Length: 190
Image (cartoon, rainbow, N blue to C red; front, side, top):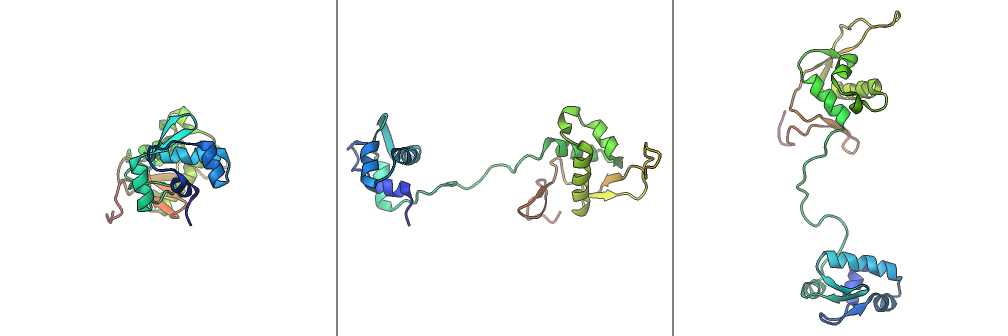
């Protein structure tokens, strides 16, 4: 089944013959705005040129694509070569605080992070992130606690980084259902 853009490419006259949006919409029995959107896709790919508002013509590359049966689907047309996503600034700052090497409590780590990075409920966010890191084997939750500030407090949990793989903070991927570490490649055992 061909896309509307592919149908539009087939409906265009030979190169050199200009055509209007209205004429194409009538030929394909569709709305002008849908034709305009698809013509813009063809224009970005260099298959048509816009002579003036509402007037287009097929290029030689467009003619070649039409005869070659080019697939004009949405999505990337080249291999993805971009860097992996950047971790959230707060969690990146937590990871950096952990990398100092000493065991630390959440309040200790929060004191090292600028206030503007904290966001909403930094204690809860830090605890959930550290718990994920502990399950993934990056962080060890120590049994000895620091004294708490409240009279009935059990004390503050201390965390120590045991798997320091690099400067980029690992992040939880809901799709893969695991922690992703951008510091090591998929082929590494680390």
